[in-house]
Amino acid sequence: MAETPELCASLDEAEAYFAARPHSDAWSRAGDDEKRRALAHAALVLDSACQFTSDALYVAADGARKWRPRIVAALCEQALWSLLHSGGAAESLVALGVSRAEIAGIAASFRANDSTTLVCTMARRLIGRLGSFDSLDDGGGSIASTPLAL
Image 1 (tube, one colour):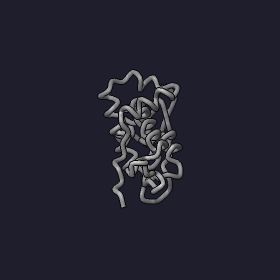
Image 2: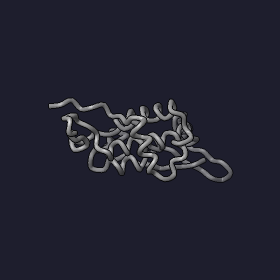
Image 3: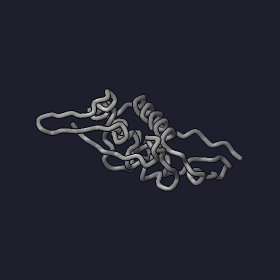
Image 4: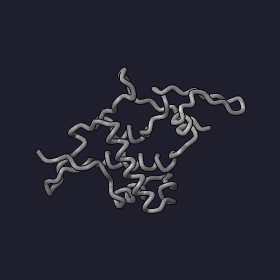
């Protein structure tokens, strides 16, 4: 059986994806180094959070196993999400262990098992049945996103 290729998307693949995707200004504004870091981070996040099925790969004409375009698109979406949300206020508060915050009468409560996921919704949609996401806790369940802007 052929070896599974590393989960990644090239800068050229990402540029082609974003050339056809509306509302990708954050990607366009980023420099090449930042884009490469975002793609590498996206691959790390998705690889650690998802168990891909064998259908996530296909055999190309040259016999090489490659990731399906939907998986490459998911990596691109995750990279864009990372550029847009890295170091956000809600993420920082959760990382610091803050369980409740209140600003001008608007309150937010956080629990370890329902904090904002690091996997964006579009990446999960694109992966669909080509993978299953690991639970964030030992009690089973699924990853949930509770976006909050502070």
